[in-house]
Amino acid sequence: MTLADGERRHLHRTFESLCRIPSPAGDERAVADWLTRELRAMGLEVEEDDAGPGVGANAGNLLVRIPGGGGERSGGGGGLSILLCAHMDTVPLTAPLEPVLVDDGWENAGDGILGADNKAAVAALVELARFLTGADRGLGVGVELLFTVSEETGLHGAHAFDVGRLRSEFGYVFDHATPVGEIVVAAPTHVRLVAEIRGRAAHAGLHPELGVSAIRAAARAVVAMPQGRLDLGTTANVGTITGGTATNVVPERCRLEAEVRGVEQDRVDAVLTESIDAIQEAVDEGSCDVDLAVERLFAGYRLRPGERSVRVAERALSAIGYEPRSTVSGGGADANAFRAAGFPCTNLANGTERAHEPGERVSSVALEAGLELVVALLRAAGSDD
Image 1 (cartoon, one colour):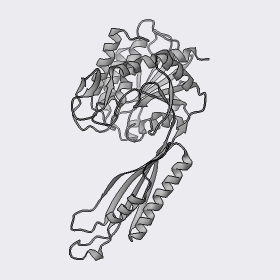
Image 2 (cartoon, rainbow, N blue to C red; image 1 turned 135 degrees about the vertical axis):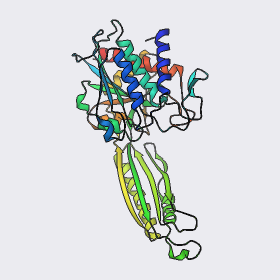
Image 3 (cartoon, rainbow, N blue to C red; image 1 turned 90 degrees about the vertical axis):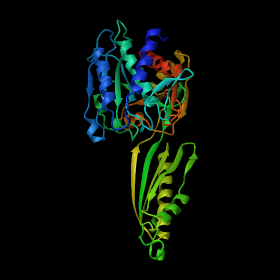
Image 4 (cartoon, one colour; image 1 turned 90 degrees about the horizontal axis):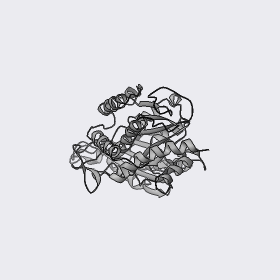
């Protein structure tokens, strides 16, 4: 698909409008309402589920169905249907949202995120709906558009979504901040580890020997814990350490938060065990106590060779002039949650840059490629045998 001037203008206007709406995870109500108004104005039915309260969000996931028959606006319909998904939330804001075009790319004029993660994909799906609901625009393949909440805090909206509602055979999310063309064929399991270390408080100047420093024990643990890229598919990190009350008090408490990510579950388990052992040994040496909590935020996966969604994506990318490339991701996406629930879903790169950073941007070329790709996916799915 080559975008017409009007389609290109609509896409950029939609993206700019979405980026101006603050929607940090948990506070997606305004962007959900904006999407609902836009899509209903196209004659589409928008269904919002009740996932919000359970995941700490003030909005639910939005689901829209567009049959493959062209002029129809809503309802079921037979034939092949595929899911296309993007998330409405962003990481926390550090500056006002002021999207501007700089060197043929969108950036935030302030020192903060733009929100291209994941609103570049959201905008592409909105404009796909506009394209499909135009006169005689059916591509013979139905589409279900899903806009999720609370992705950035652990894929919570996707986990809460009932995949039994879907009529699609497979689907895609567009949530990998790398050049268009990359297909995520493996993504990690993500485990969070929290250690609450307890020592004994004492006056640091009068009788420090009566105190037991929880921070000192935590420091020993941090030094001993595996961190960084441990191999091609495994990473570990200590992200926060907090504790103490004042410089003249031996710190009684300290809290560590860490994570382990890995594509291979056995390796994740081994690194997690090594991390826990390091904490326990440091605590024992420092005569402290510890409470440990381990939470699996999402499960990893590896796609089967020849999976249909990958085959269709390769054809679609080639059709719009991009070389398909397989990649292993170090991050999770809603695809992790859907696959864990038994629904086949693949994560595709969206061409955004510097996600979660103040310099986040998306080029005009990459933004427009997002719309071209979703149209090409429908066409490739319709011709796939």
